[in-house]
Length: 312
Image 1 (cartoon, rainbow, N blue to C red):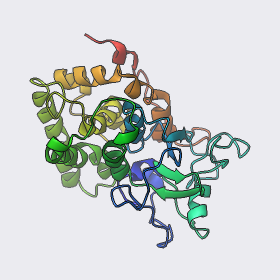
Image 2: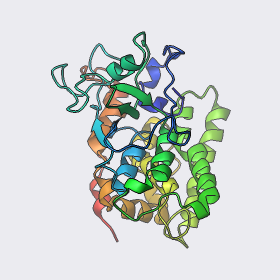
Image 3: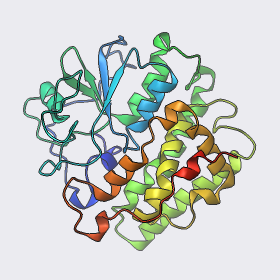
Image 4: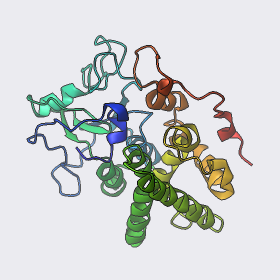
């Protein structure tokens, strides 16, 4: 399990060293052919709250891969007494309809019975064995865009080979300067470290705002993977990162081109259907089903999501 999707594993205050057995390797990929590209063999488990899992679900929908790869969601709130697991409903009687499991950890235990770590989203499960086979957000995002073309039902190319180097470069820029920064800020050990991270974040947003003044997408005229990655961070900026991560120098609405771009993407069904503002607020603030008894779990008052539908 990488640190990249740590934001969707547990509340920062409960952070601890990973205890997943070293024998549990969830990095098998389509690129290396460890995982065969085979329709109806895999199920993507993700959470509508998670900035690491949601991009993968968006890719499946944009490319029309839902008939080849099914997907299911875990609930946004941790169940009381289960701080290291994701569940599909209020109790264990609620099971994923395809996997027949009540908790995500069960798919990990199918892969390694001794598993005692934290299950994370996204997780790709091989439905023929019930085993979790990959939980690497970055790999799943790129590989569904590149290696499942034969099963696409749309003509969209999110990772065009003739521009692969450019897509990869922009993808890395967004990952490093935007996607990863909120999580890194939460574990900053000094004012200087926080300042450097916040400056990097806002510098990159300013760069993107300037870029989008002259072109519709990050890589010119075509929607590509980096746009998906940036979008999920922009959705969480004003409602989470501005408050919780102290990324408060500006708001998304202060960047006119970036804000217009984000709203335009939101009108695309694949983006809108995978954006759940309630789930995002529940996960990042309320955290679990336990009663709210401390200020850090209170959802900020007055967050307005209706503005996302106000397209100029």
